[in-house]
Length: 253
Image (cartoon, rainbow, N blue to C red; front, side, top):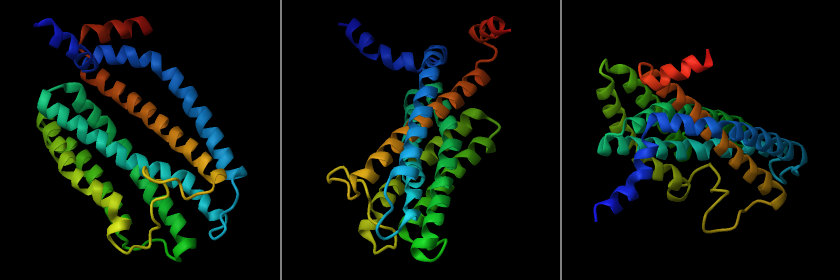
């Protein structure tokens, strides 16, 4: 009776092992690099050069091939960060807290790109760079939440306290995520309704939608790549005195 639960949770604890994850990700990285390069190049060329111009917005609509994927990942990355914080708080898995630390700056950069690309899109579409629209304002709050998590990680001399505080803020900030999702439905906003919905077919022409889908996949792969690279740096920083890291350094010297 005691062996079944052990087998059931083996995968969970394996992913919590810094050494196992570092070696596992070493074999994954070359394939991720290749997939990111292929998808990004194909998606950008397809979307920027071959997709037809929008009937109303002309060529200015092409910013969606950057804006939409970064917006998706700004939200998905926050989910991941909050989930990692919850796992770290409940199960005391140190690797989960390192995932949170690795995801915070990446999420902040992607949220900034989403806001910046949205401003570029807004100028020809709305006639202004910025409006205090519900969707845009809630995305700005998300950006500040990312910065708050990063600030908390640097504000404590005790890293354990910093991890707990940043994990709590990440979880509290989850309240903002459904507001971002539903803002265009709950309030009368300038921001257009969601282009992609799980319950409905895309409102875009297939010639525009297919390269956008490829760019979303490319950015998710890019996010995974950068997150793994950041996490590997965190692992080496925290495990620098362990025997396996010393052996790794000797084998590469």
